[in-house]
Length: 95
Image 1 (cartoon, helix red, strand yellow):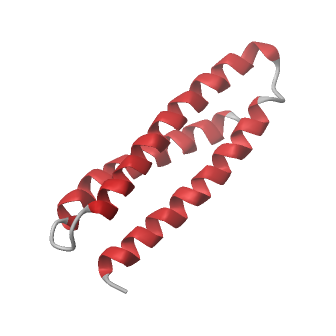
Image 2: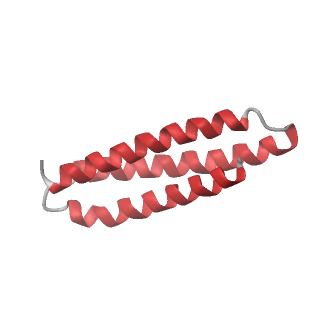
């Protein structure tokens, strides 16, 4: 397996894990008081957008040639960091 394939696999596994975490947060948001539910849904919408961006970057990485994937890697890492921070923030608020 090439370095690119290994990296793609690692990212896909992380994205799958985050999808599970997002599902748990959605479930929690449905069981909160009415006055805080709107805030939860706003945060979930922000996370959904960041997840879409991360997924798009992963697809861009997969489409990149073996020679060009390193150039795409920086954008992927920025999207990953953004999604990770949004999830951490939401998880701390949803406790």
